[in-house]
Length: 345
Image (cartoon, rainbow, N blue to C red; front, side):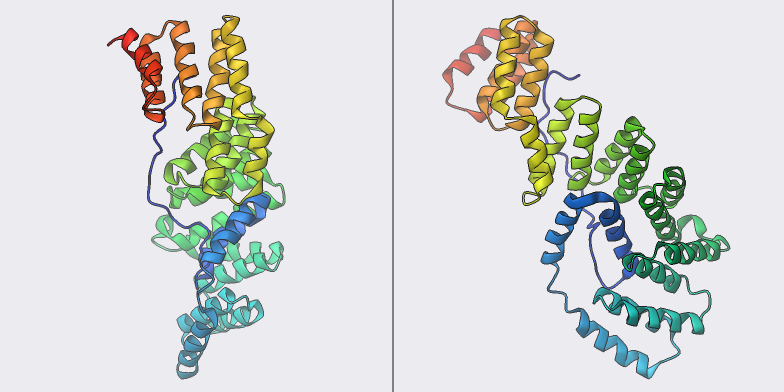
C-alpha cells in the first residue's frame, strides 16, 4: 500500500462510448452499457443523450429517403436509411430497410449487424444472437477478419447478451474475441469485468477495469464499478478513490453519491486516524487518513494529518512531500512551513 497520494489526474482523449448517431452499429455500445451497467449507467447515458438531443434525426431520414427513391436498388442507401430510422426510434421502418438491403445483397454484413442491434433494442435476444452469428459467419471468410470492426461489434454484442443471460463463461469468450480485433475498447474491458464478477473472480474484474480506465480515465461507470469491487475485497482506500472520481464525472447521478455517503465523512475517517496515531497504531492511522484524503482531497488539515502520521512512522521524505501538498492547499499556513523546515532536505 502506498502511504502517500499522487494527486495528479491522468488525461487521455475521450471516446464517446454512449454516442447515438445515425449509425446503429455504434448504438450497440449503448445497449451493452444499459443492459449490464444498471441505474448509474442509465443516468449517465441520459445526461449525455440530452446534450446530443439537437440532432434532427428525421431531417436526415427525409434526405436519405429521397436518395432511395432515386436509387431503390442501392443496398448501401437502404442500410443508411434503416440506420437513420433506427436513430429516430422508428425500429419497424428500420427493419424494413435492412431486409430490403438483404434482398439486394444477401450477405450485407452491415444490414445483419444493424438487425441484431435493433433486435436487442426491441428485447429480442434470440433473434439478435442469430443476426450476430450470421455476421461472424460471413466475416470469417473475409481476408481482413482480424481487423473487421463489424465482426468485433458482433462478438461484443454476443458477449453482452450472454451477460444478460448469466452465461458468464460464454461472455468471457465472446468479449475476448472482440478484444482480439480491437484491443483499445474500454467498453469491452468493462463488460469483461462484469463477466469476471459473475464468475466470482473480483481480481480478474479489477484487472480488466484497470485496463478500461487506462484507455478512458473519464469512464464514470467503470470508476463506480471499480469502487464496488474494492469494497467487496475490503479495500476502502481504493474504493473511496473511485467512488469520488465517479461522483466528479457524473455529479447528477445518485449511486456514486450514495456510495460515498455509505463510507461516512472524511472527518470521521480523520478522527479515527488521530485515535490510531495516539495509540501508536501507525498502519491503521495511515489507512484511515488515506480514506479521509480521498474523500476530502482539497482539505489541508487531512493532508497535514497525513504528514504527521508519516513523520511518526519515521518516513521523513514522504512526510515532507505530503506537508508540501498541504501547504499548496493552505499557502498561508506558517505552522506547516515550520514543519517542513524542521525536516529539512
